[in-house]
Length: 420
View 1 (cartoon, rainbow, N blue to C red):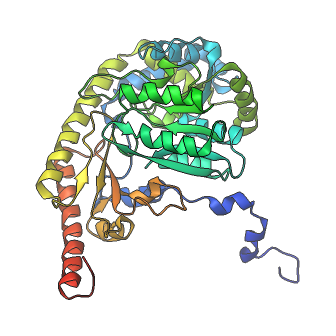
View 2: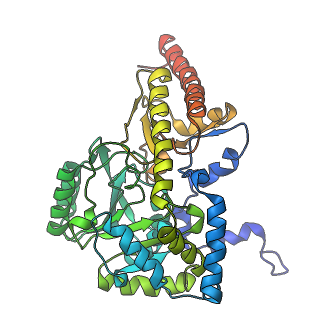
């Protein structure tokens, strides 16, 4: 510090909690500024296409909601959420064969807040938690603040490899892992869905090894083809379930929920009181009125039709332009495709070149824990927001960036500077 006693900028590091050292910024958030440039085609953010929303009707609905609620929507609210929005969520959950009462719910500021609350409730430094590998980068960001030992389990076209999970649990023993976090339906970032057989085995293992399951389910209503698979929560009431309106209405309203067993709910409520006192009542009011007074299913059908068209455009473009060494998932729903390139290509290094060529994507290493060396040759690409012709052009541009690196690698091989 300076002699005056004033804190200098370089000295702030001495004040940070040790857990801050293990935190890293969100790859998607960092790309938002670049993605807003008019010359950029963004394949990075999982942004639902809210352009399908009937804005004139929504404006009328919002005005009506404010008048009908009076000042209640602008006042502090119940920490766990308004009773009316809980009733709406209960109705939404019945569609997914999840039967709950309003007392089973806590309304959160999106499912992202739910992840942070669960991390704060359950993780001590060094605790083992298990996720898919790769997994949702926002979950990694939320959990990493509490310094866990994150073990990742690979997935294939049928979701998390339960055989590998069983091997990991056998090594750890019962009660060692605090919880398993999964996005089993249209996984983020992979787009794959866990099969029914694997879901059943996962439930069995959770009982055998005293393992909590956290099921994050933002995408199950975005199915394009294939047969629906029951949620883990509908198969076992011990599962902690996270939901959100972000992908079926509007992410800007930051409205999600946690369904959990009663003992857990009390602790989460106490933690949430310290986090925000209560969620935004006015946002909850708008959500309530949207799902009770508007044709939300029809609007979602319009969005789903667009996503199908865009997914098909992306898969066709990958087939047309990407090199034969590349592999990618074929999602039946959701918003994402996971692409794997030859292992000698580092997609984090490719990103800067891709930006110069007007394309963004999420490098795969951001979907693994910070201390992992996996995912470096992979990328997450989103098909939810750009129009089909732009998606095709983005994939074409990306293919040229990749081809340049492949040509350079082959040149080094031919010159004897590298071994194949």
